[in-house]
Image (cartoon, rainbow, N blue to C red; front, side, top):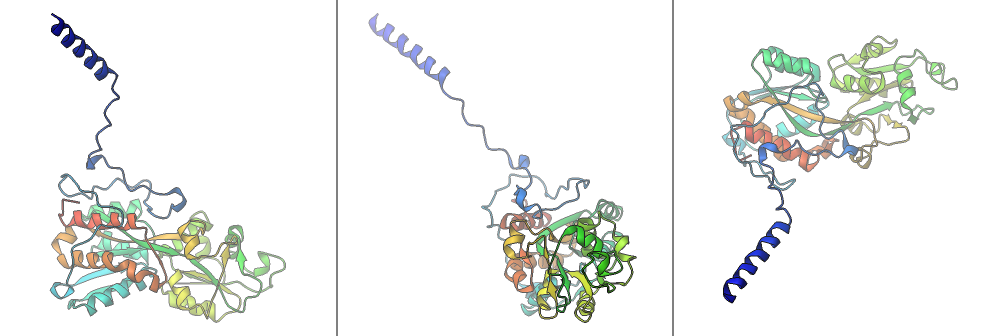
Length: 362
């Protein structure tokens, strides 16, 4: 009898302990429940998408995905000697110097095909990619717009966005300019529409403002207009004494040969011509790597490549070049004059490519 009572008491005690035990920790979310890459609010330029764009499912057949540590997504090794076939890459003049360096490296490593690399502006690049269907890859200094996504859909394309780095747009004047070294945003809005410098500030010269700006197809012009003129780029294009051109070298030449000129170009073009141009600070902030990284320089902007899953699968050479580009871009981007994408952002681009190629483990 005593033994039965002991067993009963033990059973009751065990039941009480089980009832009071803390709940088990929740299971890790399945990969399909993972949110998009977390973005530091101080670095809003890290991943830019149009707010009205539909969510893009860039996954292949959904299976369990294995998350790699940040900065450690490794793409399969590509031997350019084994790559066959040609391709067309068109778009941003800002991205063009970086694409050129990666293309040359692709050639040096044995690629024997032809890449038609066109510097025509982000808008024209999206037109070739989404409307005409002649470009396999679109390079852009701004995110794709909803109307361009819709145009792609009409020809059966779904754009895949690959973030590749960051540019700091450079506002530049002639080195002989001795009255302007730092500017405010409200001044810029006047500088790019006024007729004379003295119309902006009374103590500035009574000389016409000679402006050299990108043309209407340029993502650089779109970005600048969005930041400075509430998106109204027509004001700049129609302002007096204004020359627009898709070739950044023409803009550099114009500013460097006129003491009362001003313009804006991608940071790489300034860096290549630093002896011929003077770069302006914005609200006292210089476009340094530190200020681009911490987001205090307001003209920091993302750089992209775009392609399509069907193109990547039907033209292996396109997937191979994107693979090579994403693998080596961090090694080359600073020598060109731009700033690397964060490791987690570059990982996102790599995973998109792997999924587009049918690597369902990613």
